[in-house]
Amino acid sequence: MLLPFESIILLLTLGLRVSAHKEPKTEKEIEVQRALQAAAYHCAPAVESFTAQRKHAWAQKVLGGVPGYQQLFDSGTYEDLRKEIESSESDKGQTIMGCTPISETHIQNNTCVLAPEVTEGPYYHTEGHPIRQNIAELQDGLLLMLDIGVIDVETCKPLPNVLVDIWQANATGHYAGHPLPHLHLANEQPQVGGKRSGLLSAFPRTVFEETWLRGAWPTDKNGVAQFTTIFPGYYTGRATHVHTKVFPEWSVLPNGTFKAGRLSHTGQFFFDDDINMVVDKMHPYTENPIRDIRGRTRNWRDSLNIFEDSHGPEGKYNPVFKLHFLGGVISQGLVGYITMGVNASASYDNFWKG
Image 1: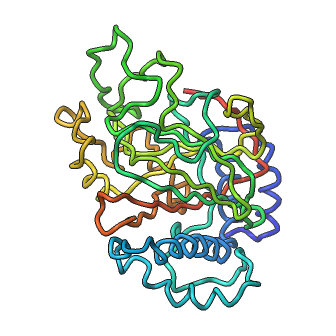
Image 2 (image 1 turned 90 degrees about the horizontal axis):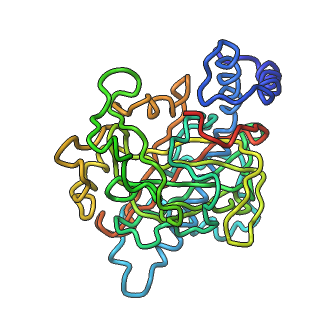
Image 3 (image 1 turned 120 degrees about the vertical axis):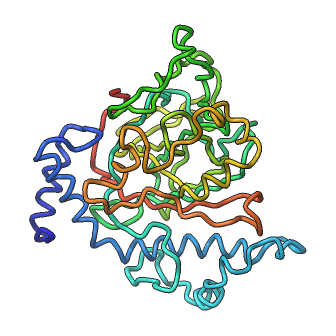
């Protein structure tokens, strides 16, 4: 049974001052986390409208198409939106976050709860992530467009001008700056048993100038940050994922990177295993060095329980991108939608705790 709304808000307020942990451990921390999630449930109509409008905007581009290329797009993907787009064009006064559910569209994240805090992992660079939308650089792989929405669970409204920072592995499972293991660990085998089962020791940072598949971009007035990247590869012990941090306070540096201010969220996004298995068969993912040795780790076997923890203590958050084909076949690329409900007033430490 949900707590009375007044009690939820009281716990929510108290919870803002709780010291940051990457997962709730004490009874008090768990109670605060659950209260935050419960408080977010009333955002459901807003998130439905929010994600539907984002799909509208993308569909308008696709349905308009490029002359002579409309046949490349999957005709069924956006068919449900044709009439809605036509009718919405005449209603210019409608607000994007109006709390009227748009029930005939596909919801890109079917929950409106707090995105759980999970570990950032050992490959985050506290300095040097460029402010840019296209993070691929010269990395080869399946084109992936990301549409990441951010709402404040306290207000159910989108958060404009918050910096969404993302980083990920390349098609062969490596992170920029971390190409090789420590020399004394070159023949290390994955840990057997325990919470870290399947993992190897983190690769050290040895190439400091590399920035591929790293970048940050501020959300627009509608609370959305969009990126161009490639579908990430996998490495030993971890399910395929994309890391993220959300900074409500940040500043631009002269070299095009940013200085981090207050951090309000650290999390990870995932992909359906069915899609992961299809991408595994595509070049250059077939060149993954552990493909024929250990293979990929499925979502349900993700080490450190990160995939499971990303659903939250109540299992109500959905950390998996909702994917659509960019063209008529998967090799033409994918677009992924997700909405994060974050506690915009929170303040976490911006460093890895191991």
